Image (cartoon, rainbow, N blue to C red; front, top):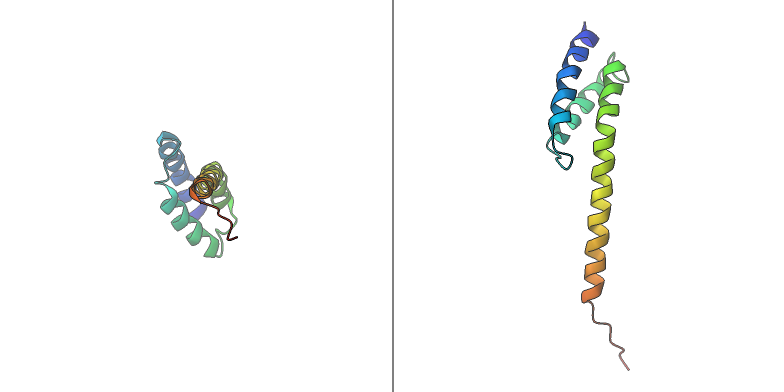
Length: 89
């Protein structure tokens, strides 16, 4: 019964995620909550819905990590541009 419930939930979840803007991270708390629950559940861990959840959120996670990497690189680059390197001689 659990897998049936989660398969029905998955349809609505994917519909909502598809409607979110590409750069929206509002659904991450939902992913974390569901993934933590499913990961610790005896029968649902690595089950069909758990895999579907990971597959659904993988592109969002990859985009988020890429964006964070880019932002960090830009911050470091801007910080180095502001540095004033002087010789102590």
